[in-house]
Image (cartoon, rainbow, N blue to C red; front, side):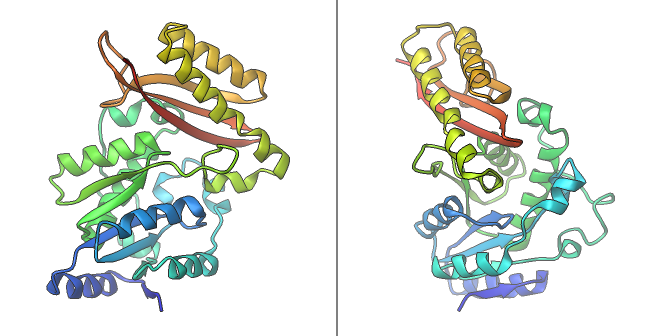
Length: 284
């Protein structure tokens, strides 16, 4: 039976018991509305620890639009069943008042400068402050030995890695590969907002990424030309691209001569839904 912890005292009592027994603890933070991509993070986490905590918390601080927050799907019953079937030990399901006891306006905020201000940071101002703040708070509440995040949210993953390093948090950050639908579309809770036809057509975002990677690897185009070609291909397919960017994997800065480990990141709207994806590549 999956245990549910609702308060700070609840989760600390459980974790303290495990720690006293010398058990290693893994953590997967989510906002619920779980799909197979989330469950793949759970399976990865189980490989690294004796006990596993998954949180469900729809974090109001990371929403730029109050309507998006209000409309975010809350599917607790279904989510709990999925986590129980996946072998999770504890579901941490806190109230907003537990995470922000004095409200969000007065809450101490965690900001990762530079990295939070590019790409997603340009198009979603303030979003990453909400992400890093809540993840830091959840880390302090759960006190895990390791935590698993997916590579689909590539910039978010890098921010959390940087925050953990900068704040000297004794937590290993584990990056899990992106889980994809049969069409190649990266799994996301937002996919459910599209009808079947749009969801099938949305596969084009991954196809464009792969083509951009091939153009980069074969040096058919310059990096700028490869970005522009990918952006045009998305527009031709009915997407509204926000950015296509080829960046250095280590810090998401623009590649310099001799950089080999790159990542191509994309954000685009399709059928009214904002989608993100990425692909890593290594130049020879």
